[in-house]
Image (cartoon, rainbow, N blue to C red; front, side, top):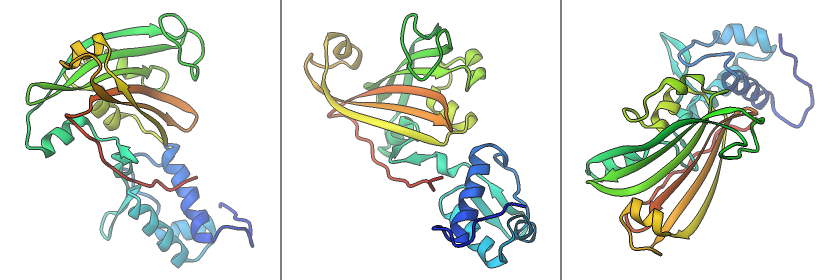
Length: 242
């Protein structure tokens, strides 16, 4: 049984919500798994059924679970689809324009930290998969993606052919995450970037740097450079905080 402090600053509903969110993000309740019944959760948390019902309703609102009278409460991953800036693959933005999407793998290799690159969040010699891709809208290059994937968090990435599936949708489907940070900046394209995106050198671009974690474990970091006049990204989402 989980005991909560009486008279604390948080309501019982919020305490239950935080505890269940933590269990889902920690993998204690896996994707597709059915949560214990409301009656069982009442016993676990020593709270009223109304409190459990309200907490589960909040989790469903944020896309952590899906509620069904027959199947019960099921853990889902809808909360992983959008976060401030969309975590959906750029292909979806292209398709929303009724355009044709394609991508091309430029490079894929395994590197060790602090040799050819530095990722301060990882220990020395940690292995990562490094990939470079170009994304196209109607055969026009719109985004250059450079990404590192921590093999300590996603070991199966070592054997994935990212010429057949882009890293973003593969990670979204296979690796859980709990937090993400973004850094957005306006840049001018140098000669190499201009060649890749078929731009005039000095053309305006938008650079998005994203780091994704599962609890304290770094999963991936990516730099996405978009040709400023060809694509934009929109999205908003609030995940329950722990």
